[in-house]
Image (cartoon, rainbow over all chains, first blue to last red; front, side, top):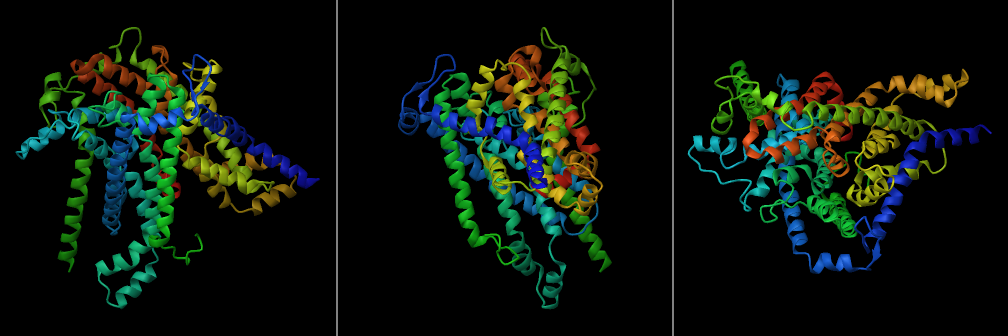
Length: 298
Length: 279
């Protein structure tokens, strides 16, 4: 009797999530899969066209090809550079110097504000031909290109904005560094290990789970970047598709052209890409991620 | 030895502070540029304006026909407030179930919930839009607020971790005293999880305030636009002729996030460090 009461209470407290899971995840996932095999413009009923959307994606849609290439370039540039900055600064700040709290705040502010439309607007101004960045370059005698209107460089303004927001990742690294067992460092000092040796043999291996965690989250997030690309390119993904991140193209297809079935198929391709990338990361982790408890967590 | 140490400290602070200023320079420039005469915005890379003017703020606030910029702030504030209330309340309920109550399929549901964190939102986007379209909710605040009452997997996870750290002796003595599950949750667990609730509230607020994608697809009536949509509209309609006003409104749009950040700073660091929340 009491057990049944407990089960009832459990499901009662769980109910918001459970209802949401069915209505906002399970149902839509099934519907999305179905829609990806249809042509649907929101106004007339969906029209079953089999694999045509997928066939078009892989054979006909050159813009999609551009979009995938641009997205991979963005992800493969922004994620490692952002993590490198975050780790470098975390190591620098972790030396027991004063004012740590102040510096942490300063470096976090870009992460706090960076997702907003306001900062993307600022970025558009800063990287304009006559913007702040080129004016600074001019001070040291370099003539900068038009970072936003030149298709060769446009992606770098997006990468730069992403790297600029390394602060949140840095805070996770700092928390990881605080957990380092001091005995190991003391023992290493006794054995005569220098700073570099200690970093390579103690800090870095013990930090690999945190690096893995940050890598996974940053990767998944980067594949879904939207706001920056939309605002900086004025919603077009231009010039010449050079900032057409996947999410932006999906938005254009789904909500500008009302090709909802095609957009649903695109969403599934994105899911597969993200799943494969994350899967590869997980597979690789057994070769480079080190768990101090002897690897009981796979 | 001490000289060497203080030299090391000095160079450390020079590097770290110097780089920090470089990082913040664009934001500082944004703030001062919004108070510069228009010609200076495009020519000067210095921070200080030659004369301080608030005309851009005036032009921005009253710059659109039919609607003041303040309207967008009200809309954003309303949506964010409801989102915070719904997310915190529902996530706290669900977290209590996962952390304290045993029921069939609990670990399966928990795993599914964590799975939804990894799922790109695009997969559910189109059907959700169609659903809200069928319900007649497009161009209302409902698609942006109602889903928040079904809990957020990230914050549920955060709260579960937190509640597990609260000693279960409290539960047992409460049960012996005849407390029901609801009283246990409301009277004992909720007050004790306040730090986790505040962390969730802060991040939900900032996430909703800055959300662009959701608001972009669901809102179009100018009277219902939010701050990010207002900025974008302003950018498109005034082009480069009125950069001053666009920058001024951008500065204003950042104020709430900054204010919340400085008030609740310690919850930020905790929240990010324990769950890897992004800013």
